[in-house]
Amino acid sequence: MNRKIIVFDTTLRDGEQVPGAKLNIHQKIEIAQQLKRLNVDIIEAGFPASSAGDFQAVQEIARSVGDSVSITALARAVQKDIDAVYESVKLAQNPLIHIVLGTSNIHVEKKFNRSKDAVMQMGVDAVKYAKTLLPHVQYSTEDASRSDFEYLWKTIEGVVKAGATMINVPDTVGYAIPEEFGDLIRRLNDRLKNLNDSVILSVHCHNDLGLATANTLSAIKNGAQKIECTINGLGERAGNASLEEVVMALKVRESSYNCYTDINTKELLRTSRLVSHLTGLDVQVNKAITGENAFAHSSGIHQDGLLKDKQVYEIMSPEEVGAESMELILTARSGRHAFKNAVEKMGFDTSDAADFELLFEKFLTLADAKKEVYDHDVFYLVTNHRTLGDGSTHLYELESFQVVSNDLYPTATIKLRKGTESIKGSSVGDGPVDALYSVIKNLVGLEVQLKDYKISSLSRGKEAMGRVNIRIEYEGRIYSGRAMDTDIIKASANAFLNGINAVLLDAANN
Ligand code: KIV
Ligand code: ZN
Image (tube, rainbow, N blue to C red; front, side, top):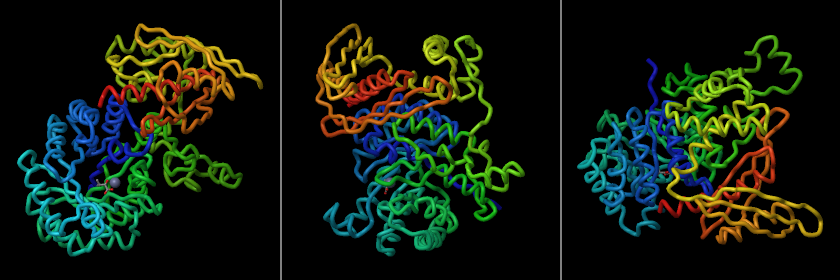
C-alpha cells in the first residue's frame, strides 16, 4: 500500500532567510493562502522571536489559513522563543511548535561551548516545556548529517521520551550524499520505530552540492514520512529541497517509491510564480518543473517526435503542474465579468466588492496602456494590489516624472506623493536611471545603496511589459523592489520606490 508523505513547506521561514527576499506581512499572507490552495500539510510561517513583524505575520497566517493547514514556526531551545511560537501559532486548528538545536560536535563545541550532555539536556528541557503548551512538538537535530550517530540517537531518544511528536533530521549544510543520507535515515527509522512508532520521522535537506532533491528522495525510500522543502528551492545559501521537484518525482515515479503526497500539483506553477514575483528572485529558465523552458521543446527531432506522440519526449504533461495552454486575452472592453472570471480562475478571492472595484480600475488603466492583457498581467496586477500594505504606513508613490537622456547631463525631475504630502526635485546623473535614482534618494532622505538592477521583458503581445527588479542596501539589510510597466523608466522609478517602501514597512513592523 502506498504511504502518504507529509509535506512541510518552509518557504516563509528558511526561504525568507535569502538576502533580499524579505516579505511584508501582506505578501506572506498571500503566499500562505496560495500554499493552502497547493494543499501542503504544514506551513512554517516564520521565526517569531526574531522580530515583532515576524511574530505578527505568523499570528496573521495562523488566523487566516490555520483552519485547514497545520501552522508552525521556529524556536531555539529557549523558553522565550518557545513562548513566541506558542503565542503566534495557537489560533490555528492544528498548531505545532518547532524547536531546533545542534547535534554535531562542531555545533555543540563552537556554538554552545557546553558539554554534549548539557546541550542534550537543553533540548530535553525545551521539549518538556513546549509540551506544557501544545501537544505537537517537532524537534530538529541541526547538522544531523555531520553528527556522531550515537550522540544523535541519544538526543532523539531523550527528546522523544520528553514528548516530541516529530523528529526532523536536517542536512543543514548540504553535505550529505544520497546513499549515506538514506542509510542514516534507515538506521534512525529502525530505532525510532522500536522506541515509539507514532513519532514521525522527517528530513530537511539543503542544496549546497545540488543534492537536496536526491537526498530527500533517498530519505523517503528509507522510511522518512515527512519532508521539509520550499517553493523554487529557496533557502539559506544554495537553498532547500524544491517542493515541486520532490512532489513531481514522487508522482511521476510513484511505482518506484510507493508513496504519494496530497499536493494539488496543478497549483505548482502558480505558486512558483507568486513566490518569484513577491520575493523578486527569478526562477532559472531551465529549472525542473517550473522553469520557463521546462516544457519547451526546441530541436526539430524532438518536435517531430512530440507531434507523433507527446510521450515520446514528455514524462509529465504541462497541465499536471498547472501550465494551462488556454488563456483568455482581455482588453479594456472585456468588462467586469470577464475580468472577475480571470481573477477567480487564478484562485484569487473577489468577494470584497469594494476591493474588487479598486482592482478593476487598475485593470482598466493597464488595459488602456497595454491594449492586450494576458494571464501573466492579471496575476501581477492582483498580487501587487494585494501586497502593498494596509494603508497604515504612508508609502511613496510616483506622481509624475520627466527624464532626459543625453551624453552631457542626463537629468531626471520627479514628483512624489506620500500620504497628503507632495514633493518634487531634479537631479543629474551618469545616465537616465542614475539621475532618476539620485533624485528619489534626495527626496526620500534615506541613505540607500543600489546593489543590483535588472530589467527584463515580462509578458507577450505587442505591448510587452518591462519588469525591473532592484536590490538596495539600507543599514546593512538588503531589500528588494520590483515593478512593471510598458514604460521602462516608469518601471525603474517604481521598482526603486517599492524598495524604499519595503524599508519603511520593515521599520514600521519592527
Ligand atoms: O537547516 C536547518 O538545519 C534548519 C533547521 C531549523 C531545521 O533550517
Ligand atoms: Zn534549513
